[in-house]
Image 1 (cartoon, rainbow, N blue to C red):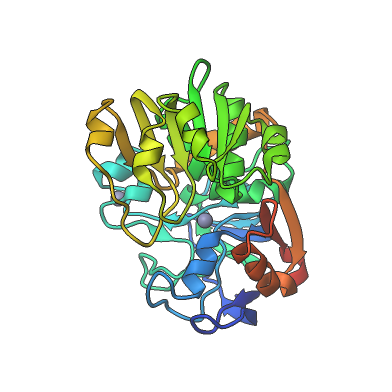
Image 2: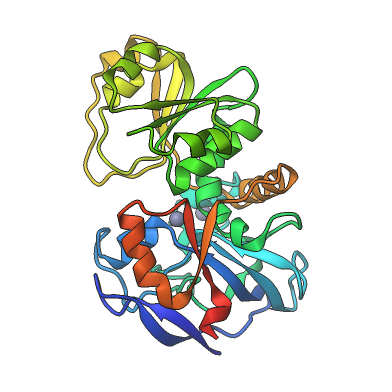
Length: 346
Ligand SMILES: [Zn+2]
Ligand SMILES: [Zn+2]
């Protein structure tokens, strides 16, 4: 079927309306009428060519929420009318150790990204800035009632990206968690860590968003531009989640960890980070990374967010404003996620 979409025709060029072909609904497929698609910083990196050559035209979007309008003969997980979500991956081998462990995002064959990736049938995937998408039912999440669908969309990337390390490193009561950066990822990390019962500190460049940070659930807020903050907070945290995709002084942040503490990067800076090994061995500290989460954990995150009434803070825009929204994301002028109203595409 031919459907309306917004695509980047070439690297660095503005997105423009177009039509794309969606595959016929196979036996294990779900056809989704998209309601909302979040704008993730990865979309911008991809279409700008920051992450290498791409199979243009590219329809970005991997924070998708919509309604099931058709299901294949073998689908039992989802029914017509269900509200569902699709995140950063739409396929994986399903057979390797990582897939079997529920870590499909680390599939040994490589997970299939929701857009600009080669699917297992050889076609190129196209993302959620579109009216419809056809996805294998095993990679489609249930969006529970109780989360506003627009606010749910960013949970499919920003939500799971922060939920996964918070769960893995056991953020909860009695744990001191710091979140570095209060953007799309950071604001989700604050909400989720707070709901998990941890004591949450935001480490942001300035105090500009302090009021927001405290409203979102942070207990403390420090400006990293103030060197005194690093003295005050030395050895304090059990877990630091770094959401910043730029070079940071890793040793300074590692110094904020308690013995056995972990600093986990979910931001992906293009350049290597330097680390003085003494920052690690001087406190049995760990430096780790984490990328989105498996399908089962993503469902757990959505259920958790519904139970705790957590959604992203969003600004809903019509599709024609997508290029303007990209500019504003790059200027950090968004609190905290743009979400495209996909009904403006039809
Ligand atoms: Zn993303
Ligand atoms: Zn696999």
